[in-house]
Length: 341
Ligand code: F6P
Image (cartoon, rainbow, N blue to C red; front, side, top):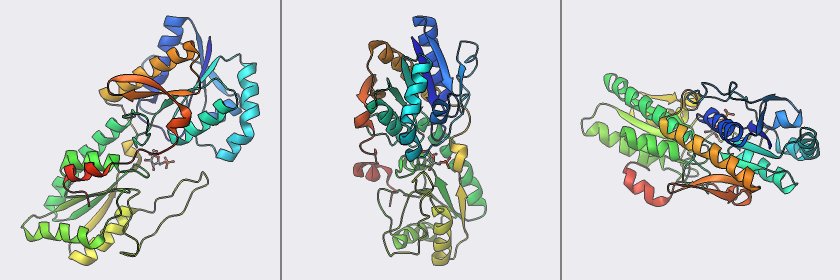
């Protein structure tokens, strides 16, 4: 068989582990040929690719990023490009395409699949917001990076009696905020799923200082929002891909907390450091399993589906289901964390 692989959307630790796994299973075990499209769907639309053999994937298991490169493509551009993509798949004699990506990529995968292309998807994202899989690779690494940063920030916050408001990624869900905040023992966590009350947050931090503590760490998911009308809030608008452009909740919260408490409050934005670097062992294993199972699905002709983790098993789920809803943090998780507002 001849299989094309691509990585699209925001990168994520573990992408290279999937690519390596696909090549190992397909080339070594099945005698297939694998090619990789450069920079995501763009590579398929422009027929820009490289051969992926064992040498090409040597030493990439522990490497962050993606050796194939990634990009975002506007949905309208993809819709217009479906026929071109089909032409390239035919020209290259491909039996299957394995796109590895998050919500946007899986939507594009569904579009391609609905138009007759043989697609098997692999979900990835540090945000952990894909509903049909228990977890995505990249999340464990991102939580680890954020937790280490929070541990470090606690010590400097204490030295200077500061409030540090630490902004973590996650788009419209609070998974990274919740897990890193719990792991590091944050004093307050705000998440997009539950708009916060700024007065309650200020009171929580204020009570801590009143009780004699000399610092506080607030973890803010980048998509967290105040209850409407409770404080001035810059929404940020949308980018050209239709994604919400977050306007810096940590900065806005620091201003509000400093004004209310008279304590120095500083924003810390962890940003892309959460996405870079070597994946954890957990993410490498999950990514490797996803790659292996994607190749098996290709050989079974199980197209229009994606790999997913359910309990300890890898299962195949229709792409149509995969992109229906976002996996948000369920209400019952807030109480366990103690400090979610
Ligand atoms: O979806 C992964 C993610 O890292 C989000 O957490 C974040 O909002 C977004 O991508 C950032 O995207 P970009 O790298 O395009 O700024």
